[in-house]
Length: 316
Image 1 (cartoon, one colour):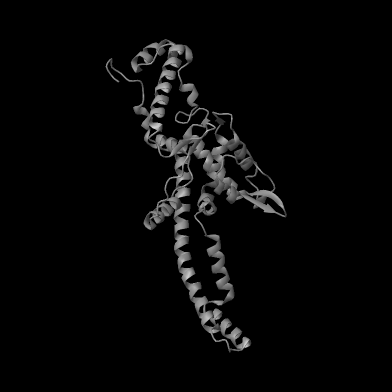
Image 2 (image 1 turned 45 degrees about the vertical axis):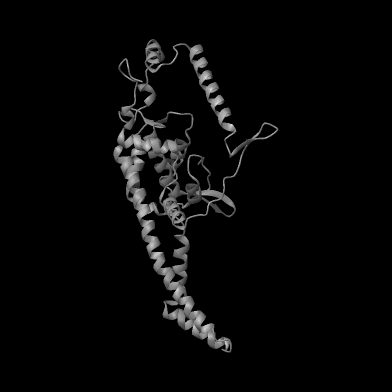
């Protein structure tokens, strides 16, 4: 399974690199097209020129730069690579692994650890269409697990009917299957590293005798009633502190109706360099939730091994 996850990670890395190369290529094409436009405008600068002569000169400019067809292809390439969505480029890097991924998906017994089995349902659809050669399929699987970028990449209309692009759907589903395996939302029957984590949890009968000692170690009340009372005391103290600080607060106001209103902070002039940095970071950062980030880091670093009950009688 580690090989499967690394394979999908490499596919996405190559897709991002391909998009970066495409952007470099586009910059050269844009410069070339701007040069063509400048030459055409130079020809049209003479208002007294005959339209037929002007048309001949414009055609000559286009022929000099490869002809209208070549320039049209350059425009199409720029339009296709616009934005920062590298997902449509993944197919060519995925295709060489396609057969192995399908064999693996059919050989493994996969189950979800939650009630959400949308990824596995989509995987079933992908497996059913393994031998299909149709580019567009008139089906609309549940893609609630996928990001907005994947929705734009996978979904497409034909003759007014919504469907999916088969190739893009395959890459999307296998990508999210890898993510679900890393986060533990999908497990593999018989696997050691990707087993059902719920089976590794201590049963309640074994945990209950240790609750009192654990609460004493952390300074919590040992009973449910005492624990609730302690929380209520903490909340009451926090509320008192907020009330005392309210008069000195210049941003939050309580209206006559008892509704809190947060004032808009004074507008700060944007820093050009900061805006450029934020835009560059946003282009390079994929869409991730906080839980996905934590699960990713845990998968590779196993940082949660450092967490556990405090030991020693005087730890605080």
